[in-house]
Image 1 (cartoon, helix red, strand yellow):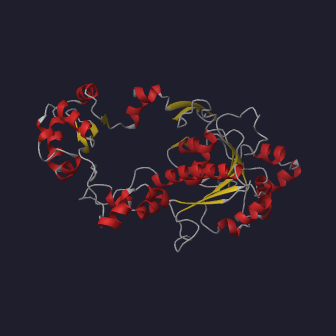
Image 2 (tube, rainbow, N blue to C red):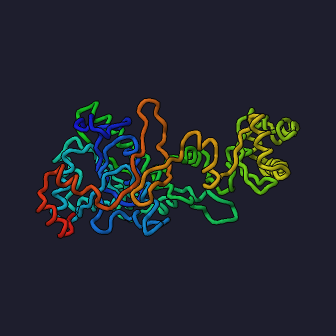
Image 3 (tube, helix red, strand yellow):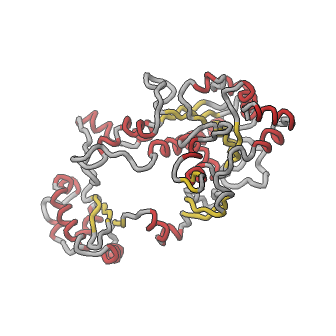
Length: 407
């Protein structure tokens, strides 16, 4: 870890002193850097001159400004630099000398074409860890293909068993593959930092694809197919391994999620809806047979739920320790007492809108918590501070490179 920033005024959190160069674009790479910035890493975000990161142009838009950018660009120092130009490459190498981690998520081969392969970067800084995020990874027959999260989600197999059997495969309503790859990338970066700082002091290259983190989470499907030739199918909100598990509509038109796979949680549910007979019914005596008779059990539970309001159900279920909860939308979340108590949504100062609300840092640390210092700012906001004050460019050279489109 770079120690030079340890006593800087902004130092806080478990990653105080770590320097990260965010050379990615859009979601997967930049979000990994945001997660590290949230916990105190000094993150310098590199964007293309004039256009900037593509997330600056993504909806939702207010007054011509992307609100998404405000979140993913938070806690970062912002510079512009054309890495494809020789002068831009030279400045990038100067930046590399003092950082711990660089993150990029361009199509494999792009950084090599710019003369910025890991070998070339490590020659300048042997301690450097380079995290590379791409659709299909840096190797293999698909490595040269472009890969967005949607393609990775489809390729992972997840949509094949997500959704209802009479409907098409269902993709998530948010960039799941990108976000998950970002989390794996931040985690992997810290694994590599630990190895470096407790090993030989040398960095390494980390290869993260968009599809593999999702594929890792399908758990027993691989061994299930290997040993039993099982192919998971779409069964709506149920799980083939868990019953009852579904969403149910209440009398007042709300929706409730229930999961009762363990025997004790199932028995508490049966008693709460005043159906003790469901405990001894041979169709439902354990989770395995409940899964075989999920249609019948769902119909019984759905009928009871439909006769009661969400409020009444939750009062009853909470008193009986039934594992259940309402399906919330974002409007509900803004006033939910658990979200409020945990401060999951916070107010952040913003240069365009005064104050904006966004998600707080997670997870919570008892001694070295993370912090949101500011939202995503203007393009090139920190160019002078980095290029002139830190790298020592003269004012004349800075203006020259700016006019040339390098900065």
